[in-house]
Length: 146
Image (cartoon, rainbow, N blue to C red; front, side, top):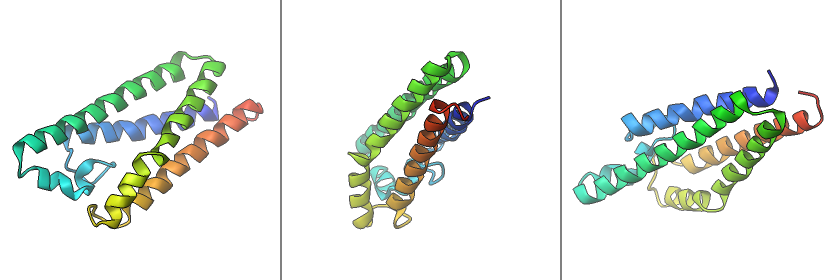
């Protein structure tokens, strides 16, 4: 089993836990669910807004599930070239976090809209670590080392 498959498998399991929490306990603060956003509790005061928030949370969970399903197929059925380019696409798509989501979560964090404080940094570092591990596994596979 290649390092690439191991790294992607760990990612799939980790993200699957996020999907399950978003579907069944969206208000949780575990597994990067939306309970860290103070607005989640505030949205409960307005049923229309809360339904919209729940819709968006479930939409994100469903999108992640599609993504994870495709990654699983790539891991199981893809040849090494398909796996390589699948993970390369994963690196590019995950990197977009720093374009739109990170500035927004950093702003909300600085305005005390997230509990715990500095959660945006935690998420940014976690995503950077994922990108680094994927990139290292890509380089090692390209070089034929792993």
